[in-house]
Image 1: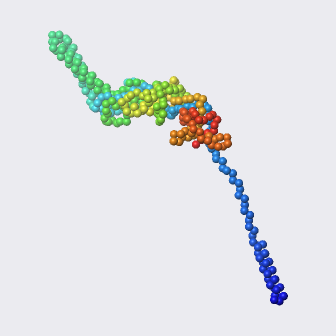
Image 2 (image 1 turned 90 degrees about the vertical axis):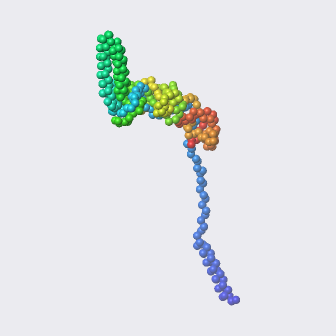
Image 3 (image 1 turned 135 degrees about the vertical axis):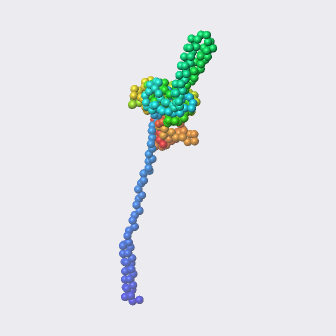
Length: 340
């Protein structure tokens, strides 16, 4: 091979190597891998409360209503009666003797007048028989006739009076039956109720815990931003027996409270706030109700310790109020309880 050819071959080899080296330099440099940032563990936040020492109360509360302790029910006691006209409406003030309801007389007033005349005639006949001393039989018959006419008159008078129903007391009408003229009425049906507005007590209708309220329990009644002390005088457990189903149902879920002093502006139907303390203990360990947990008959709390560790403690609960629960065993004052 000639020297010229060798030079050409060497030149080509060198040229190819330069192209390869230059091409490698033109390629982009590989980026270095970034170091992942350090992630701080998320610290869970808890709603907590301390176990404290104090007084706990279990209470029954609600909206009470003032009602009268003295009421008169206008009851129709006869038979075959029909409504004539109601002379009063709810809220009216009446006096003893005022007419509340008139029933249809159906000619009873005329019959009564006729019998009144017959009674007067019988009296006159007896006077004449007394003058005629010789006629003993006439005198005997006149006495019997007078007695008979008097019985008839009293019977009609009672019928008439039963159809004109009056109030027996001074007071306020709190109930009027919704009936219209001509409606028939059964015997011993209450048509109107009159109550004495000066003799008041408070009635609280219970939704639950009725059995925990007993006669003699102290009560606090708030009316017009003023507090009045009272005592329970009737509870479901002490309610009187009655054949009136409606009244028995009311008694089964109502508490009645007499106040030591009736508010001056209280009226029949006025509303008040009532609180009755059924249980109370002092110097006890207590926590919010949300701190007590129960599962399968087990009562326990979760406490947060100083090193942020959680620990479950079995506890024995006591009195439970609307917001707190007493802890008899298993928890100490100052421990931090996690709320649900």
